[in-house]
Image (cartoon, rainbow, N blue to C red; front, top):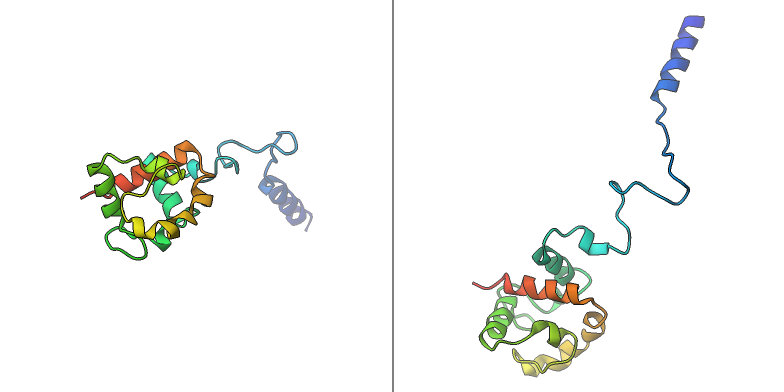
Length: 136
């Protein structure tokens, strides 16, 4: 009986994980993503980041699909027109350029400038990279 209790105690002790020795409030770099990194910590390329933003917090997919017009023009149409006319998608998303794709829908797009104006240049460039990645 004593051997069984002793063995159970040893097994219980051995199975306990050693807790981190880091100061309170700190966590291991390899297992934690800080909130300031947000989506960019998950994305591996600007195109990946752009897609994450476009489909996520940018809420762009509610109006734009890759190959068909919904409310706004398709992503492929946007990419083609901006490339052909040498437009600047980033400047447009900042609210500092006139629409060149579908001016009749500009009023609808303006409501989203509140979102895009808060984005960093890196995030806007990533969206631009994602849009251009849809060129066929």
